[in-house]
Length: 124
Image 1 (cartoon, one colour):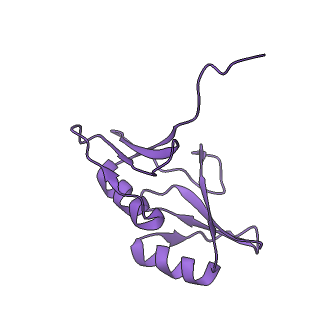
Image 2 (cartoon, helix red, strand yellow):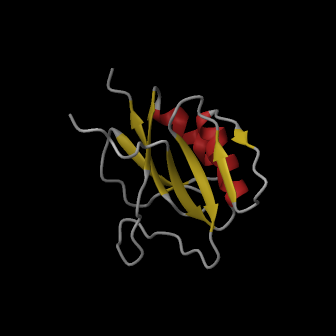
Image 3 (cartoon, helix red, strand yellow):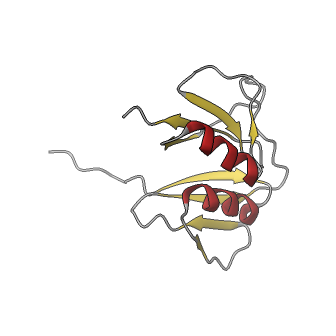
């Protein structure tokens, strides 16, 4: 039997302002910020083994979606009960709706640092 070398406890997102982006995603998820001593690193407390971390990067260039001049590198999907309600709430937090929308059961948005993320209608 094979044993894993590691596990996936956190996804890290590069950004120009770690605290500001962490606060945005804290409001989206309801997960509180973990207090960090380093201003260049903030993470959320998901209450589970996996969470999201935010790393401040000098010279940060936001991804361009759907283009690949600066690829998206990664994105987050959030399953929601009501797509229209979730849309209005993330827009109020500072997200913008992407011009290109490839699907009808999900919508693509850009967080305040320009990272694409999706709101996905719960199929149940």
